[in-house]
Image (cartoon, rainbow, N blue to C red; front, side, top):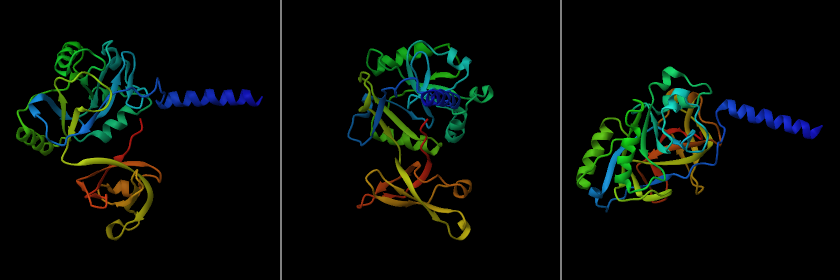
Length: 282
């Protein structure tokens, strides 16, 4: 009797996970991950693209999945236009729209009208032969004429570090996140690699919420700051970047949050840290 009840409970739990859109089709896919740009490279040997603040999406030829491996519940028509070849890219609504996009792609039942505003901006062909320059050409051929929302990410070349800095300033001024640099002669690999570099005017990191610090003045009765713990155990107060709604209903204790900062103090604490978002597990 007990075993039957356990089996029934497991079946119900699996069904609820399916309805919630968090079924793990396989383990998290092995993808190429970027290192941070540190300078000292020949920029002319890299393809450059805008760093999109979207939701990373991996198409394995059968299912569209988050980086975690969980299946994305996209409309059937969205999936139908994808090729048999695996793709790696970002679901994207536009600059500064991450929170809205996140809400759309995590819904149990996809909303056609909202999904028709999303673009799948593809930047890589996982496991494809050839170097990155050759894979760009394959990607353009593979996506051509399929659907207006399936788009290869624009890739361009710059001559040197000064040109790179000018382009970064232009993108950030326009509301963009930053730039990605992909070595033109690099063959596909997985894991974190210097073949792919990210360049932003700030750094991102994650920390765990350990306490809510009360607000004062206009924030009396609301959140003043989050006390957060870094992976190495150091703690600091994260007090800027919150909306009034977030101050009234702050991230729960134990939640992982993403923040931005310019640099570290000599004690290893982020300077000018600003809350960005609750880390999405997807």
